Amino acid sequence: MSYPRISTLKTAADFSRRLTELGLTLPFDEVVETGAQAPLAQAIPYGRGIIGNRFAILPMEGWDGTTDGKPTDLTRRRWANFGKSGAKLIWGGEAVAVRHDGRANPNQLVLNAANESEIGELRQILLDQHRTQFGKVDDLLIGLQLTHSGRFARPNDKKKLEPRIAYRHPLLDAKFGIKDDGPLLSDDDIARLIDAFIEAAKRAARLGFQFVDIKHCHGYLGHEFLSAVDRPGKYGGSIENRTLFLRDITAGIRTAVPQLDIGVRVSVFDYFPFQPGPEGTGVPAGNGVYRHAFGGDGTGLGIDLNEPFQFLKLLEENGIELVCTTAGSPYYNPHIQRPALFPPSDGYQPPEDPLVGCARQMNITAQLKARHPKLIFVGTGYSYLQEWLPHVGQRLVRDGAVDSVGLGRMVLSYPELPADTLAGRTLERKKICRTFSDCTTAPRNGIVSGCYPLDPFYKERPERIELNAIKKGQE
Ligand SMILES: Cc1cc2nc3c(=O)[nH]c(=O)nc-3n(C[C@H](O)[C@H](O)[C@H](O)COP(=O)(O)O)c2cc1C
Image (cartoon, rainbow, N blue to C red; front, side):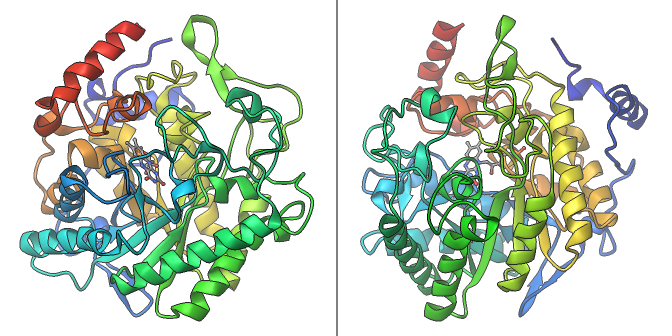
């Protein structure tokens, strides 16, 4: 199945027609406004201050830290780019493990005593870059994403999963080689991990981060708790129990560092894991009743927002104002998580026009925002919209369907997109992310991430040759 490329949808009528063909509701504005009154230029009142505009940078890891969890020049370059993007909300920077065993790869950052100052330096680099470019930083909100990778931990060897899981999963255990209860975390293990999150949050506060994101997405441990319906004991079963991990971390942070705000990035719906079917197109890896998709309707392919609504209510009750919505997992159903025309090397051909995946995330976020208007929602899944990203983003913000437009892959190829949009400059087409997925394929094959097709810096790196050879071999 092939889908029309976004770059061929040149006029609003073309884009509209394609949305109609797909039966999608995805509102957009034909003209992107500029100037002080432009929807994307509006500030968001937040806590003690403001967030200066409606663009956010989503957390984007580079698999490029040192093996002891410190940043490298590549990490520092990426954070500088976040600063020069013009976005006024930096949602987390990148996933930072609270402990060695929670690293998703041996090059993930770890926030511990030895690494603290160098991780703090990343924030400073971002801040300096932003100040140089835009003159002020008092309307810039910077958070740090804290994580434990759970089922997808690879702390010591890029190729070796060393999972720590909340429960035995009927499909993912087989897919990722879990054969016994060895990786199961006990309640005591979890209590110690909660302490590690609180310790890391204290460090983040000391470094000047204004909030920490307690990551609950993409199949990592926090997200896995949300579907631990079969786990016995206090962390499984009811939604109250499945959110105890988050509530205990929140309570600990509030006591230890009351000045630090808390955000949560959450996969608000999930599907079956997918796998390549005939001709490589993604098909569900299961059938029948599926109880392990948080935000799922039990079919593995549908959405029921009842529990996500309860989750958001809980955030409000716990004084958490910042939420970043995302979906599924890049490891088992990437098409719902990061819609792309070209799959990563461990993926499958898209089973739907990627526009469907974009619209799904945006419409779900709009429904959540409508029910919880006081929460500040950062949306995800915009990069595939390409030339139409500012048009859709502006309209969703104008309609109050989202508060901030989060940018993931686009910030790797075109960091200045927010600044260019806000200034009314024509977008630079050669920088627009076309979702080649090299930024995912590279780390899946042990190579640092970056935009190899479009960023001249990565284009010239030797890893590009290695990556191309791997892709050729896999074809
Ligand atoms: C190379 C790469 C690194 C990522 N790193 C993180 C991360 O550290 N934490 C996280 O929550 N999401 C991470 N994501 C997911 C993105 O934040 C985002 O959800 C995804 O790319 C979809 O948004 P987009 O359509 O704008 O790309 C990563 C995605 C990619 C492609």
